[in-house]
Amino acid sequence: DVVDSRVLLQSGGEGAVYMYGDKGMKLYHHTDANRSAKLQAFHALALSQRLPSNVLGPQRLLTNRQGLVGGFEMALLPATAQPWKKLSQFSFCQHYGLELAQELDLLIELRRTLQQIHAQGVVVGDLNDHNIFFDRPPGGLTSAPDQFQTYWIDVDSFQFGGFPCPVALVSFLDPQLYDAGDFAARPVFGVESDWYAFAVLLFKTLLKAHPYGGAHHQVKSLQERARARISIMDPAVTYPKSARPVAVLDDPLLDYFHLVFEEDSREAAPESLLHGLRRALATCPRCSLKYASSRPFCPTCNKQSPRIEPAKLSGSLRVRTLLQTSGTIVQVFVRPSGRVSSVTRRDGYYRLVHLGVGGVLEETPLFSGAAGARFGLFQDVLVVNPPGKEQLLLIDVSGHAPSPLAIVQSERFEGEAVFAVTPQALYRIANGYVLRGRLRHGSLLEEIVTTAHRWRTQLWASPQVDVVAGYHRLFNEHHFFVVDQAGNQRPIAKSDRGAFPATSLSAIAVAWGAQSLAFLWQGTGSGDLESHVFIADYRGRALHQATSSATISPFDRLDGKVVNGMTVLHPTDGGILRVRPESQTLLDDLAKTVTSASTLHWHPRGLLIQESGSLFLAETL
Image 1 (tube, rainbow, N blue to C red):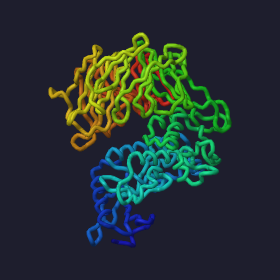
Image 2: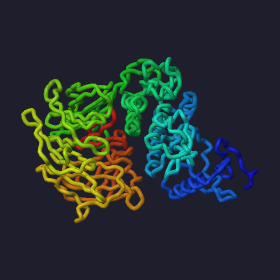
Image 3: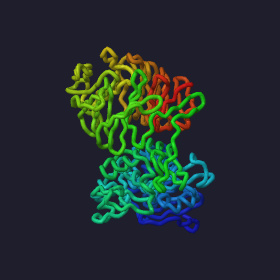
Image 4: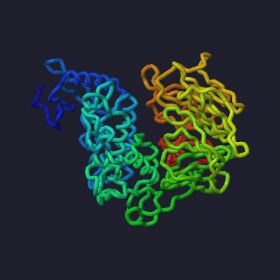
């Protein structure tokens, strides 16, 4: 149709992209029944408007004389859009005034889009920096940070509904798929391989080098290095002079890169890592380099870093800095008295830190270990669950030096050992029972609390009193319950049937308050992804319930929230969102302190705000 009116924009092995009026038109060199069926299915998905609008999918299908789909129309990229691969070039970033802060803004936006794609059961597969573009309309690359836009093209290669992604760029391909064979033969990608590719893109954008870049004397090629897990951070690798110094980033982000590129982790990059670095950037007064403020000296000129102000005022609130670390805050514990303790990890070493309103009171070295350990604290006993293990190590931390007490095991839920720790007791699952253990004369004494369903029961503990919340699925129903301070199991029910109708549960969390708790979960109900909130008191009595679209903020993530009565407090980029049964209010006093990636903790004097390397106490003046 009107061939002379088409302007060739790009041509590749599969087909060519033309500009036709105000639309883009992709025409394939060859088509077949499989490709035609996939495009028809993807077109239906695009029309359902469940995919983000910046995913440039087919708006109208183009069929040939045989009735097969031979191409499609799509929206055009803005004229000012730039390919993401240019962000790995220092010269490009310097020319457009893009610094580390703006790169992090873009990456946060990109990560959110990828989450939304996955939420629809779609896997990108061929995720790389060639088929993603960015722009900052309407002021171009010098406009405000919140106007960053990202665009995804070549989306017809996405994997979904049994249709494979037929192509992949080797430099972004998960090494675990190097021997997968013909990608077009069957679906081989997953959300794990997407997050690996995102980690590569994250590394290239921030450090201007590939994670397996640099030079190694024995292992030469990128693929050989990837198979051998010899990343650019290995001491045997010569780091490129053109790359950004590794020390520009903070330890939590570098720990994540280590887990992905040297230990085969495929976990999604936590958004808190990006927000944490974004909030804590310092500018060297001598050379103007932007870098993580947790570094004591500028990574380039070695000038001492600017001092961080430990306390600041914000409206009617006083925000105190309780802890600032160059490592990672792994877990925070709030005792009923208001005492705060934390487990941190820095340079591969875990430490137990006791805090006061003025900062660190005492720091106890624990042990060296890989990232990913989980912790609990009761009766001056630290519970340690090593990553991927069923064992729970009990350590007496009441003295000057940690002393081992016992090792017990717990059954798993979704791959992780189940345990919950209140200030008074340890709860775990063994032999089909929930056990409650207390320390008596140096020994752990346990009693049976209730029955448990193997691999289908999860527990959460109150940080204030000896109350535990639980969940299990039995046949076609979800069951929620509370174990009160007397050890009685009290079911929480939506109706007299004693359970909630089953949905395809995708995530679940519990938020705690001084007198109440909230179960938060997401799942597919009538075909759409939904978020549910069910608030109960500590005796299991229902107070409030609500359901909303899971794609609507503040339900982008379920953890990190607290409850006050029937009010749920959500951390957001604009402050604390207070959601009551009848209203929502944004408390913007803390807009400069809290982000959507923050973790909130209830405290008798106010609210604790946990970032990856910082812990703040917000208290009312």
